[in-house]
Length: 311
Image (tube, rainbow, N blue to C red; front, side, top):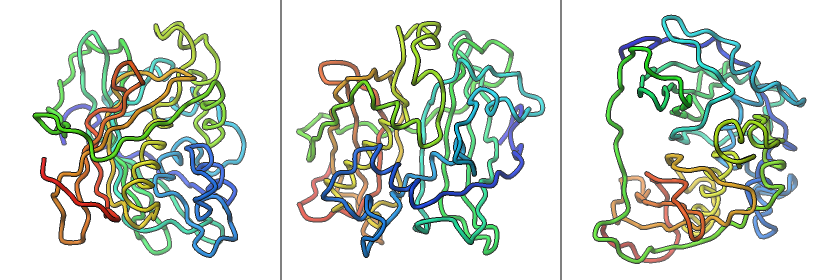
């Protein structure tokens, strides 16, 4: 790591969740009545959906709504420019699932430990802030999940910083063959209004004014909604809906999604299976009849049934 802010460690943040939070999250990303292990707290195999920790940096340990803009400006990164959270978008997210989450954090102590990987100057388009966040049980020291993410600050570049490294790409097969799995997610005008109750209260996803100022024409759906809903459907269609069958998941946020858009995901099995039985899956999600909204999609899933084929 090098450059302004690289290696800076944010103050640890205490986080907590209840079974109710796990139920809300699963419901908000599209879990259905045939998946009661995510939706019914008395189910013998009740499980927190594995991507849930991605919401904890927003929710922290409160059950109340959060002032998104104030929270984003709470910590100043030494040597870095001031970045305006009113003009921030998700860039890319990678998550590694190391241990299954307990159904509730009650009686335990968890915190997020976040380190800056780098801050990159992309010129006129803006700046990228890349971080790694570990969810840690403070009593045992065990890390339950790792999330590497980049935030893109629109129009906040040209400050003389490093351009940053080239990203690793995971494209669909070339020449492109038919996907092994295709599925759809129909959003509604209320999709973002439900999802934000998990703790991500960015006004961009609730009221039209911020989106108008940023050139989107109005409110857009959280990029992390599409990211999470696609993870849910990949696990359902390829991993039998078993949270233990996903080890890693990532995607890049390529274009905005508006309320009411239909999302269509195409996924390809690569036949590349590791020693633990997890196969690399490539995928992309597009707005039906429109642009790709999640690119560079890659997951490690223990596939239930079906034959794999090499890219």
